[in-house]
Image 1 (tube, rainbow, N blue to C red):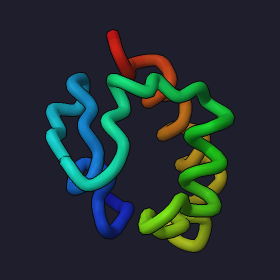
Image 2: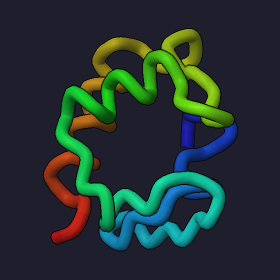
Image 3: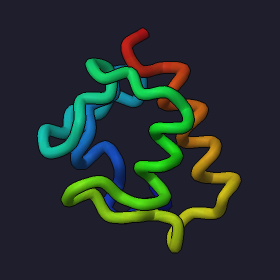
Length: 72
């Protein structure tokens, strides 16, 4: 909710109930925590960086959540 644009606008993650079609389908790629943190901090392709919008703790929380729930 804090990240703008919100993650679910672009990404699919079943646990979060999101069905975005622009970005990676997180349930399919099942990224590990480090990959998520790097993507959120630096951006990937058209995905913007969020290191100026989210605190380090928030980025770690997102990475932990995605890495533990993607594909489950």
